[in-house]
Length: 194
Image (cartoon, rainbow, N blue to C red):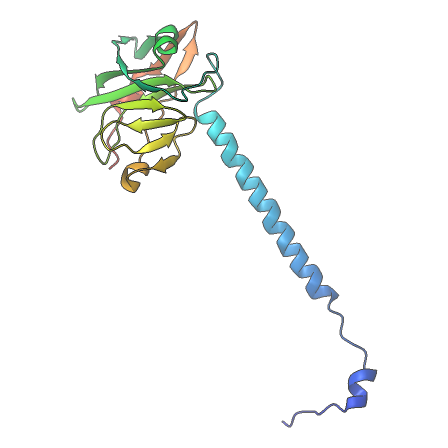
């Protein structure tokens, strides 16, 4: 089929096709992508805030400090691990160990974040098998490989990428009447991921 040639006169006298539908389509797609991006990011931030729960102690600053773990002995009774909040609040970061249901010692820690929130969970940098951490400024540092995480949400900052992929696991503590309570079942079921 031969191409239809348009004369110069017809090029300027013919009515131009409207580009409005294409323009509206592009604007619509950009708006949908923008709204989806904002919605997903707002959910991520909520998760960060809920990961450690609400503040349970006064806010503090660890800037310029390196705080090592203090070893404690928690109470285990009625399927719960109990630690006085005051002990963690005073020492900033504590450690203890309990056996899981495979008779493997699970290293655990609890600490207060600069915003006063509580983390209680595993104390293992799983790829390097480091079992102790320190609070340094605004970071949580593995004492073995020096991998650093954000104190507030355990996001990887620097160090070994393999270790950064496995931050300490939150064991969902609750605080009642000045006592931190962790369900023993959480520790019994804990396994090394890497």
